[in-house]
Image 1 (tube, rainbow, N blue to C red):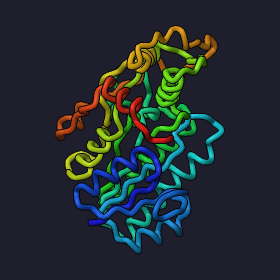
Image 2: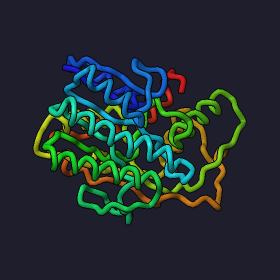
Image 3: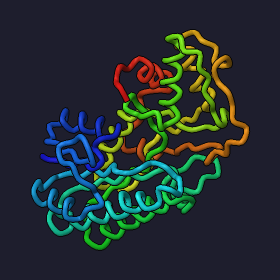
Length: 294
């Protein structure tokens, strides 16, 4: 069996690739750089040509610039919206029995601070969420119109040693490691009280694999359902070295967070047999003691 991973250069692509190979799947990786097939998912000729040539049994789409900033408006539209359309139309024409997985996001839902599930309404609150929402409606159209096997997993915050410092959890880890080696730096955090999930990417892709290998559920929230504050993450990371975080962290009183609390209700994916195994302490240990250069 064969699988294509679009957007394979990120943490989800990495851990899914490991899982698929362990399962005996031949994996074809595609990204804009550093993988087997270099190309842009927004380029229909590239996508359709790859799908025609490989004839995969599975396609996984992780390609995205995960930022809600307006500056990424066109990139989000091309990568997520157009990219999804390119994949689904190519599958319809050349490989209709292929199973397709699309990554969704917690950020595309209306968030009132209560746990989010599959029934929570969408909210077009940013260019990123608009692109994600459009991709979901494309998935539903192709699923309903052409009976295609198109799955969506809605991801909440998850991390790994493969995160870059553009993401706050890795930024904190990297700073703590430098401070533990003698750096006198201080780093700024916007709001320590913001609460979110601290999941491990390796666990999340296990949920993806379970979802795509059944035919009763086609859209599911994939998250831990457990939230912690940013302050708790900082305490754990500094605590690993016996350091007092108060000596190294400053706060930006003018910072406006995108949300106060973002947490999932994973009841549905749990009913399919998936649950997370890596808690916040294990995740922090894994990221702090990793030798991976990000």
